[in-house]
Image (cartoon, rainbow, N blue to C red; front, top):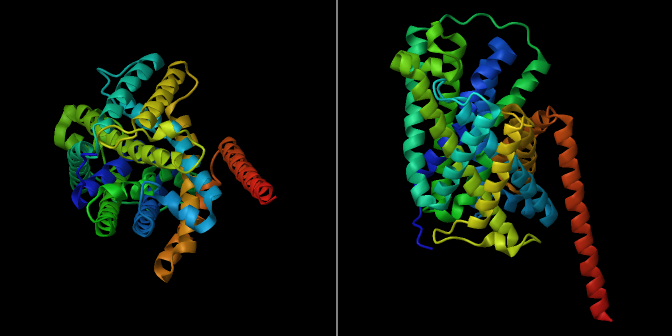
Length: 420
């Protein structure tokens, strides 16, 4: 392997780009539409949630480093079967989540070049998907350079645009209306998409310089910057006064800077953030799959790697799955909202198992307490998921438990047979 390791700044930018990703583009107007004036409160809560997640998963990455990531913590706390369930939940989330991320790029293309049909969107998504897969296969060092430019540029644009809107083009906040717990619960379910990705922080532990110092520094710094961007963008959209020609959503925040060219800049920024999310999350989970192939019944071929140490068989497999999903999008069977809803359920399941495991393995009161509060919050949000997703998660848990019991029975039977 000729791959050199990356430092704090590169890892921090990878995290910023991957967490902001599609969420910062799609979710602010969606949250305002659902929660109204309470949307900013939801963003404040999810920002604190994200900082806590970054802290917990960074500590897990320090205590149990390696490509297994947070799944190693689940195994340490609850055993191999729980680790497999956690890992499989994350792997299943990656069947749907990256396709939603790429489809976001297509959705926010300028009207002049945006595909007008579902088939056209599917074709454009497939092309972007193949490009992203090629970038992952080029190695972590090259990928980190790309994400450094993309994430820093996007963060600067969002903060500058939101700042100008709040200072020069905003109205005074009004009194909050009566609180609706059901609406806020659904809003938090939507906003969880904005902090998906922290659970893969530890998967890169073997490929950074001095992970015990680099990973937590990068994670906490990235979480604080991301929280600032969340609040600035949400406040700018909630209180900003925009002319009709400014457009909709985050593009409106860029209007004071770029005028009529704001949709084009927004499209480029969206592409950069979403591609960063795809690169970081798929790259991390591909390492997890390769790691599992050495421990479980997954085929050994999944651990085949290229000269940069990238599991190219796993990347190829995910690419084929995502291309199939784009075919389903083109046929009208899936849309962006459906892909997000399904992926979120699996992401939440994995995050819940990891935070509960953290409660068990952490010894210090502060991280143990933070992990406990996170577990309760994630469970509350998970219960807001569609019942179909919860049923599938239940079947996945049943399958893993049955498989584990069968393996245990066979091992005992073989031991008893050998003793005779």
